[in-house]
Length: 282
Image 1 (tube, rainbow, N blue to C red):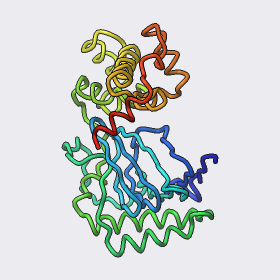
Image 2: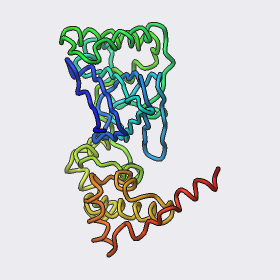
Image 3: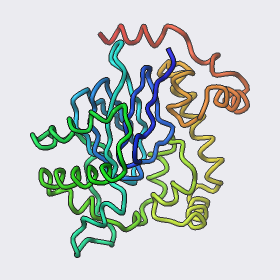
Image 4: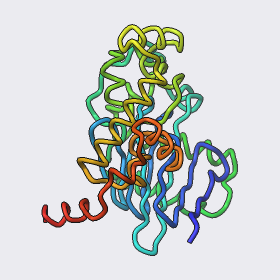
C-alpha cells in the first residue's frame, strides 16, 4: 500500500494530513505556531534528548523556532489523520495587542509540542474543520477559521499570549550546547544560524572558534559516530538509524558510513540482538 497524503486544502493556514503508512516528516524545523487536532493514529515528536507520543484525540500546541522530528503512525488499517491550524505572522499581527513584545523572549521550559486539555468550544471548532477534510476550503473561510482558532485558544489558555504575540527573532544562545543537543537534525546551516540568534557568517565564525572545524565536517563526523554507537551498542537497524542521526536516505548513510569507517553499517549491526534485548526487558 502506498503512502497517502492529502496536501494542504484551500489555504496553507489549514493543513489536512492523511497517511496510510508510517511517515516521517522531512521538515524538522517548527517555523510557525500551530494547533493540531490528532484525529486518528499516533504522533511521535522527538526533540533534543526526549521523545513524546501523542494518541488520537489529542489537541496539540506547537511553538515556533524549535527543531523536532515528527513520526506519524497509522492505527492498524486506519490511516493517520490530523488537522493543523497554522498561525502565520499576518494572522497574529492582526490580533496582537498594541504592547506586543519585540524583544528577546525569556526561556520557556515546556517542550516544542504540548498536549492541551480540550474545552467544549475548542472541541466543537475541531469538529467544524473535519467536514472540509476531502474538499477545498475557500480562502476567506480559511482565514476566518484561523482567527477563530486563535480567539478560542487564547480564551482557554491566556498564558500563551506572550508566546504567540512575540515577533522578534530568536536571541543569541550558547552555540556549543545547542549543537551538541541538535546535531541529529537534518536542517541547513541558515536555519541553525537563525535558531541560535546569529547571521550565517557569525554562526560559521563562532562555530570554528569553538569546534576548530567547519559546521559541515563536524556534523558529518558527529552523526556517523552516533550512528556507529547506535548500531553497535543499541543494536539498532541501519534502516532505523540513518534517519535518527540526520541522513536523508539509507543509501547516502551507508556510503558515508563505509567511507568513514572502512566497512558498511550492516557489518556492525547484529540481527536479532535488538529483539532479544527487548524480550529481556519484558
